[in-house]
Every structure is written in structure tokens, then in C-alpha cells.
Image (cartoon, rainbow, N blue to C red; front, side):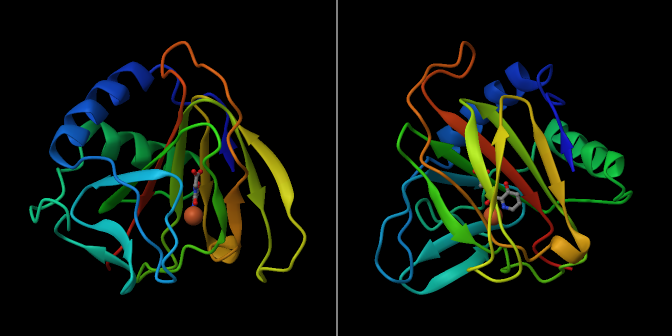
Length: 195
Ligand code: MD6
Ligand code: FE
């Protein structure tokens, strides 16, 4: 389900909170297990943070860069994620992880499944801010056909249940400037990493 423009009003406060998070857990480009560099810059907040390096993909309680716990999930973030999930039919979503992706023009995210969480019953709630991007929505197999969905500033995407493990990705972000966010796209994905 897409809640179009649902987060526009909260966006200025969300951006302020992000500045504080990035001051504690800086944005960085992670390595894939195969040795490639992910083009989006990433950080996390919440009890668990998603990390990728030569050893694999996983959730960690500490930021490998600072060796400190990830910054706590701001109350506003938790409230927004829970409220959006409830509107999509997931009444008790309590995220324990928030992955923050920042895309400069040209950055992308290859087709992948979100499968590093323990509980595939919990949905994923994803907020898009700043520049628009084309989201590729595939099927259960990597080779299944994909559908293009334009995600714009303030859009919230929620999915779970039978589509929880569908492949998806982001095509390279086009050059542009968003009046509030600047020359980038920010994506927050809220997950329940552990049961
Ligand atoms: C992005 N999002 O929108 C990348 N995954 O930048 C994801 O990979 C994603 O938006 C699972 C659920 C929602 C998402
Ligand atoms: Fe994903």
C-alpha cells in the first residue's frame, strides 16, 4: 500500500532529527559481501542497525564505525511508522530498526529481498523524502517481471504478508533539487529485525 504524500507535514521535523542522528552515526557507503560498494549512503537508528560488509548482511546493535550503539529511534519516527502501518492494516507494528538510505543523483539499489529479519510477519514501512525515484516492484523470483512505481517526497510504502519477500529495487536517481531536502533522496525503512 502507498500512502501518497502522507509524511509531507512531518518532513521538516524528520529532517532535523536526521541531522542529529548523522552527527552520532555518520552516513557511509557499505561494502557488499562480494566486495562491491553500495552507491547509497547509509546509517541507522533504533535498537538494531542493518549492516553489510565482506562478512555478510545482518543486524548489529553497535555501529561498526563508532563501536557505539546506534542512536535511539526518535519517538516521532516510531509514532509515524506505527500509525502508517495501522492505516495499511498492520495494527501493532513496533519497529526496532530504522535503516536510513541517502541517494545522491546516480545512486541506485539493485533488485533485492529484505530477508535479514527474524519475523517475516511484521511489515516493512518505508518513507521517501526529497527527490523522486522509480521503485522497481518485482515478484518472488529475481527474474520475475518488475513494475515501476514513482515514489515522491512524503510517500509512505507499506508491505508485508504474502509479498513480504518480493524482490524490489531503486533505479538510478535522476539529477534534481528538492526545495526542502536538496539534491538527494532519503529513504527510511522501518523494520522489526528481532522477535
Ligand atoms: C529505497 N527501499 O526505497 C529502498 N525495502 O530506497 C527498500 O529497499 C525497501 O522501500 C523494503 C521495503 C520498503 C523499501
Ligand atoms: Fe529493501
